[in-house]
Image 1: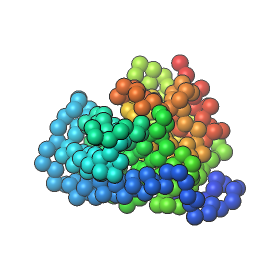
Image 2: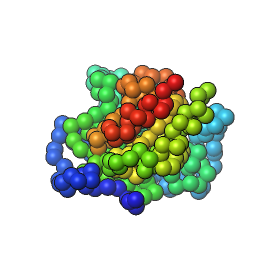
Image 3: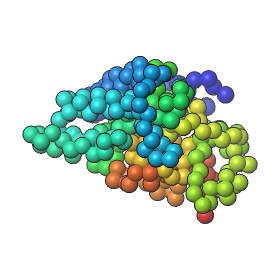
Image 4: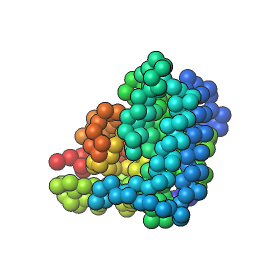
Length: 285
């Protein structure tokens, strides 16, 4: 069991070159990395001295840190890419600047994923920033500001942790896998009873973006969430997991990302190909 990100190929493969080749989205990736770092610094600075915590629902909260991080992101996108739209958890969809021709691109942002953890003092939260073009994420960054760690990917490049290419680790047996498991709904108890005996242990972080990004380098062997996800939870981390070699689908085996999906309706199953099909079988009604 590793204590940090896996920075070589899957077991038995060659070592990965630390030099990441240039690609079409390098400028946007550099922008997202810098922006996520600055937004994460706001979160770290404000944690522990929050003044206002609001309840969005019975189970979810929003803090002034969410709003401050989100405001920074919105202003930065408006300044650097005025023709781009922004879809963010707290403010929804913001159209491009009125005096600029729309680019057809949307930055999908969770300014603070893991707000309940954050508000309770738990150091398990992140900033998630993705660029979506033609309905697909093409740039993704997940920033863990507590560890100072960036997971990132572009559609034409490798997944990386702090700039170093990574590949997901593939364990031979599903029985040895640690799975980030989130089940809900009428069939959750039945699904739990089917899945639990076939894996080593389930874990829950309270941050979907961070957990899904961890599949990319093997800190989690798989990520399953039955529902309650939104585009901003998965856009960046799903791309990172895919580019690291994971198979990523919804719970029915279909496409995992839809930027137009209503909030809270997205499901995800991300796992190495040898185990993904079996997990779908165990989840099937």
